[in-house]
Image (cartoon, rainbow, N blue to C red; front, side):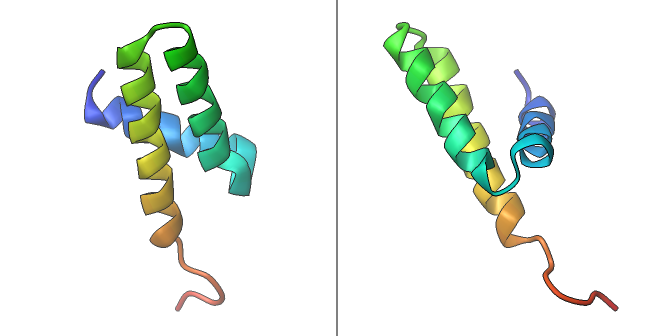
Length: 64
């Protein structure tokens, strides 16, 4: 999975889960590792980090 796909997944989770998007990604990471899917775990952890990055760059208040 390329970086662009991970960014799209992160954006979709933000759109669908709002403030809970990071928690949702981490929940999916836990489910992946519980199922023995190390690659899936790593992907979901990466998505969680991207969500945090996206949230930190989202402007608040009025944008001019």
